[in-house]
Image (cartoon, rainbow, N blue to C red; front, side, top):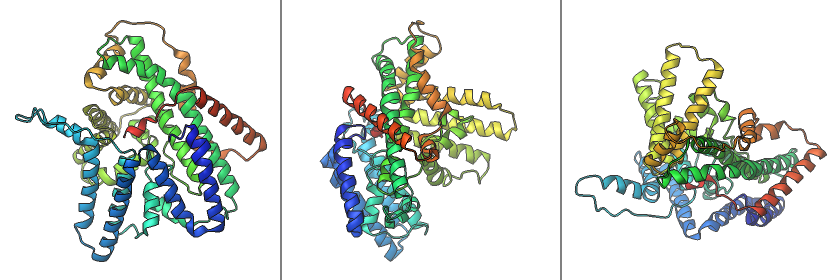
Length: 458
């Protein structure tokens, strides 16, 4: 059930909002169990077979947290985290690891398992890890099962984030969303975020797929990719992934607001970044802080000298690349960003100047070029595209530059949907404009095939 689909927009969402309003106003004690039930229904719509996995994951981790609260057993939390990561590895990395093992002597015929990847498993696993780590450190409180289930499975963010810390959401569970003086304004802004996210996805992100997909498909098939095609495909994917993922985040934040929950912002005009460090402070912000707090700092961070800091950056980003996908191209993408962050650190340590315009150009070029590794299905396919980008292929013709102008303006000039929505004053004309936008989005959804969100594969 995609956010950008009629079953969700015209079926599940209206029913869920009505049920939530009735329960919140007349049976407030049932509100959280209702949201848990709605979240499980939403998750099960994709594939009911994975609902028991999500439910068992929630139940077992909650039991571990309760047990730890009683016993304070030192090894309990590390073992639970290891078990969560093992389940993630089983579903997401079993085939990848078997493929790597097949290169070892005597293991060439090792069978490669191919398990269906449960949607959102990376995201809800990281939520478990964050909570259990903070619980062991004494920062997180015990939760009852209903609250913990809602923290993990809340349907706007269970499939592709944002990654939410327990401290950002737990206190909101006890609020009465319709008793707030700004309740109507929250609902209005939630609807605006939903509309803008949908518009970014269907009007900007999805059309760019028509320029990116054929290029990377041709490269995967071993065909020659011309210079024009390589640049067109690379730029198309650069903007496509931004509008696809940031559009999903806007929808998630808007949907959460409709149910009385504020989720953290996840994007802040990342293609305006003037350094790679600045880019990761603006792109997938909740993942960046997870990597910082739960990998980079434990690896040593900036507290143990320059060499340890460089190694920590490289290891953190390489593991971040592996988290994105079970393939060596993702590992290489993460490693490239780790090396780039290290180079930026050395540049700053040396006190060398970097004009803002030059910094922006270098950062945008680096990010766009490394997206090739992220999107390509193999190193051979990536090399084919890189050859085109470097001019080592036929020039080609027909660069569709007009297709990139609207996307580039929105992505580079901004502002973010979150910032715009919270700055716009409530006005009848604004409500009419967003109603027209929603109708246009619905017409577009009905006219074209819907693309699944890119980050659903992670």
